[in-house]
Image (cartoon, rainbow, N blue to C red; front, side):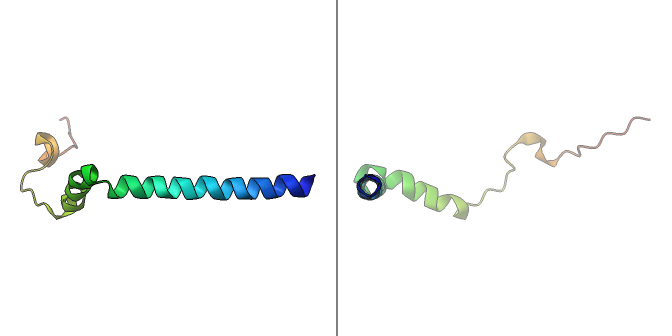
Amino acid sequence: MHETLSNFAQTGGLLIFVLLFFGVLAYALWPRNQAKFDAAARTPLEETDKPETADHNKDETHVRA
C-alpha cells in the first residue's frame, strides 16, 4: 500500500511540475508578452538625469538652534 501511494505521488508530482514548466515557458514566449519583457530588459540601461523624487537632494538632518 505504501509503495503504491509513493509511486502515485512521485508520478503525480512529476506531471504537475512538467505542466507547470510548460505553462511558464508558454507565458514567457507568448508573442503578446514580448513588449513587456523587452521594456523590462531595457530598464537598467536607461539613464535619467533627474532624481525620482523632488526631495531626493535635500539634507534629511535638521538641527534646531
